[in-house]
Length: 179
Ligand code: AMP
Image (cartoon, rainbow, N blue to C red; front, top):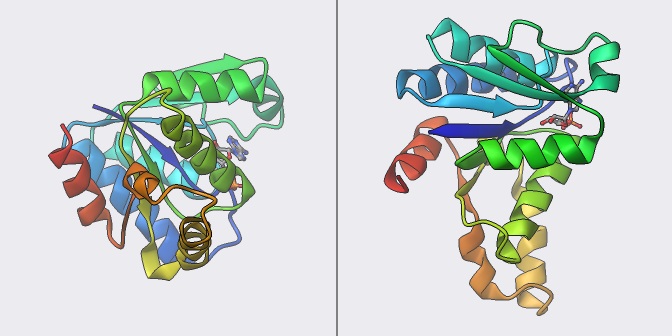
């Protein structure tokens, strides 16, 4: 199984978030699952990639040329795919992955999560999407989703498109159950 992880590129976040990324990377590799991600060496992205490799797992990074030029690419990835555009990059990440996990992050993470959710809603894929709501980080986003369901913007039936969990262990259990 190849798991695509969306998470923060920021280094200016609290230590427990890095620990969360490390825990996920290690746990994935222990299950024999590979990582597909944005190919960054920074923030939680770099931590999750290094943790996967440290535990014997394989890392596939998909990064646009301009980010590589800024020297934020993870050159130690087992496979580093360089794309021309952000859109091409996301398409490759989607194709390569069997499931998606969102950890806490900023705009980039939210954008990736919402796009993959929307694509599932539209029937472009039917792969599991797990939101790791560690420490309630995603509470406001999940509340926004609920507002959409309550006011008819999103069909309540689409609540099945994602699963929100609080821990890495629960995220992996969810994915293991969907195999
Ligand atoms: P953000 O949540 O805004 O920090 O953005 C993180 C997400 O956007 C990641 O999952 C990446 O796919 C992408 N991204 C943002 N910054 C970078 C970077 N420096 N290198 C690679 N990918 C990045």
